[in-house]
Image 1 (cartoon, rainbow, N blue to C red):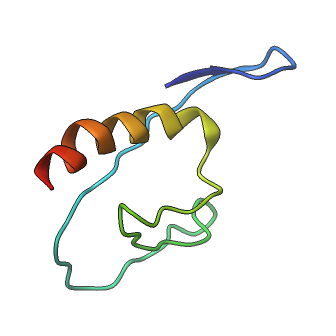
Image 2: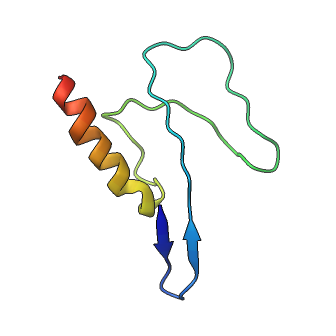
Length: 69
């Protein structure tokens, strides 16, 4: 995803999202990079998701998840 901030700064983000139905083990944060790891139900995503990736998440939900319901 490519984003241009109001101040003109440009960033490119690569986000990897895994969809799983069951999980065993312990989530581990990478020190200095990650503050918190957590699973979310696709119907209960947090409000503070990084705004530039919302279009991709919404597209995935509408094209993949909602069609399988």
